[in-house]
Image (cartoon, each protein chain N blue to C red):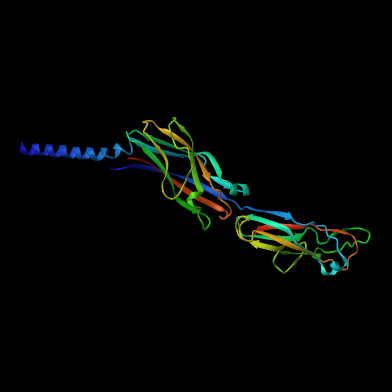
Length: 164
Length: 149
C-alpha cells in the first residue's frame, strides 16, 4: 500500500514536469507571436549612369506580416546582417533603406524612410491587435555611385520582432 | 523580464553593370586659318576640348582620326595630307600624340565620377601642316573612345 502510494505521487510529479516542459515554448514564440517575411521584388540591376547616380526604389519590394496575440506592444527591427560581393569590396549596409508603403489593416505606423546599418533600427512600434498586420515595404538602394566595381552584391536584411 | 524575439531574413541582390560615360566640350572653334609662320611652327589651341568622365572601372580614353588623311577641297588642295598633321596632348603634359586612324591613349584614370582627380581634364591641339600640301580646305574628324584599362 505504502509503495503504491509513493509510486502514484512519483508518476504525478513526472506528469507535471512533462507538461511544464511541453508548454513553456508555446506560451510565447509559437502560439502568440509570429513574423512572416515575403520577398517580392528585392533585386536591383544598375546598368546606366542614371541608375548609379540616383536612389533606386523597388515599390512593395517585400512584405512583413506580424501577428501578436499577447497583451503587450511589439516592435520590429531591421538590420543588414550580411553583405558580400563578387568583387573585393562589399557594399556598406547604409546603401539600403526601407520605407513603409502601406499597412493592412490600418494602424498608426511609421512611414519614414529608415536607413539600414549593421545594428538594429526600429521600423515599427505597435500595439498588439490580436490579428495579423501586413506591412508592405519599399526597398531603396543607393545612390551607389561609381566607387564600386561591376559585380553582384548580396545584402541580407534581418528583421526581428520583439515583445517585452 | 524576458523578451520574446522572432526573426527572419530577406536577401537583396544588387547587380552593378559596367558603366562608362563621358562628355566633350568644344572650347574653341575647330576652324583654323594659318598665317605663313604657322605652317612650319604650328598652330596651337590650348584647352581645345574638355572631357568629363564617369566610370565604375579603371578607364582609358583613346584618340584617333576617322580617316588616315584629311578630306580636301579646292583646286590646289592635296588629297594626301595625313591625320598626323594634328597633334593632341592632355593639357599640362608635353608629348603630343600625332593622330592616325589607329587608336592611341590620350589619358587614363580611376573609377569615380567627374569630381575624382584626373576624370576631368582638358586637351591641347596643335596643327602643323608644313609646306608640302597645297592651299585648300581640309577637314578631319577626331574620334574619342572610352574603354576599360
